[in-house]
Length: 277
Length: 360
Image (tube, rainbow over all chains, first blue to last red):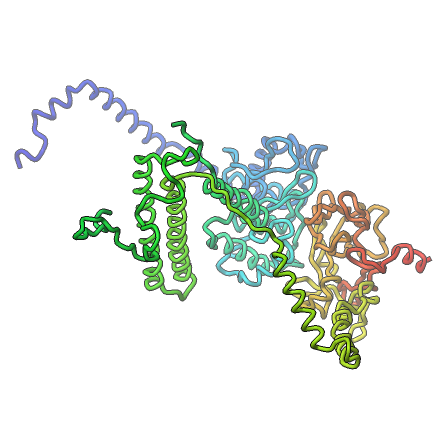
């Protein structure tokens, strides 16, 4: 169909375009590089192959540990005066601390805070690190996806346990609160179900331990169901005011509410400055 | 507003009566205000141009108030309540329209007063508080006349029985004060931990919320905490207000001299959860420092050292409950607390000294 396709004349014109040469070279390089990448022994496939073996996972974890953790926790995780020993803390503790960005700890403060993970801390790297620490002296392991699935938990039962054991520090909607000497209980909102479970069984930092023999895994799942369920609840007033209860609510009522009423009262009764005739 | 003025045959312009105002017997509506004769130095007339602008603003606000008011009625008809979502929508629509209507009305009236009406100072005369002498004399005479006619002085029997009739009614409120009691007696000194159980066995500690008894071997992670209630009283709030515990698991070497180790079991120690300051639940436990913090007034207790007060207004440590295990390995209370739990009360005295004396 003449007129719809590209005419010979226009094709020739394109070949002579000043950028045509650049485009051709780029295309050639791209094909060459892509072909090499496909043909050459693939780095990540090789890593995956090594990772499938348990021992190699641990070895990989050890080198990660030496690179990123050993300066504080000691070359063999024996602990130093800067940081505690990691022997026996288990894979769950490693997964919690590193996946939430708390470890490696940035600057010294009352406690380690949640922050974006460093670049090396991929899911794979964390699981290797966890395998290494687990190999040192056992300890709590990472829960399965089933164990932390909020859909399988009962939020009502979980709420009862949450109110008995957690809200004194973490607040009734998991908003967190103050502790002694500059420490605080963090908000639970950014935590994943796995992290919540791991925090309960390992007791990170100042948090106490809730082991599986006294609070069963099913009860923990109920609590996770409650915590995640509360996040979805709509605040009837439009804004939850950080959901920390009467402190912010009172502050807003007193400062904003009464302030606005006072301004209105001043406006109603204010005398205008008299204009001189 | 010239339409309101009706042309009379005589050529005189009489303003028509405005709806909702009294009949124009005195000064007619629509005339210049009588209070403020123009030219008076105390009176400030509004700038006519500004007043006209303000008039449009006020009219707009009143129109908004009308629309919002109509919207309120419309929302009441349109948004039916039922489930949570539709009720929320209805609440929002009703509240929003009513707020808008009342707020526009209020702002409109305020702008009207401030920018259209003339400004001047008005002195409001007040009459004296006291009644005039004639009235006071009349009241006095009437009172005396009534008293004499009643024969209150003459008929002694009537007077005395009337006073007698009033006496018990006067005393009644004093008698009712008894309802403030009875005095607590020894109720505040004891908790259900010391009560014998139905089957005669020692009372077990159970987990708050689940009611499970706690096997000492299961509560084996150092740094652990549990909120604990007495078996059989899991839902008795009056008793729980005194008997609730926090159960902590420490490493044996972490205990200091303040803790009574005979009352612990394998590093497990039980303290009253009721703060000794004003009775808030003190359970913010840090496993690294062994601090128990009370959220109400920041009283801080050292769980490793017998819950000694290390900060804040509390005057006494949290009482420690003597615990042990039964033959099945479950944690039990060996006795009641040796001192009253919770805040001070009038008859408490130095319960700690008494406890020391009975022990020695």
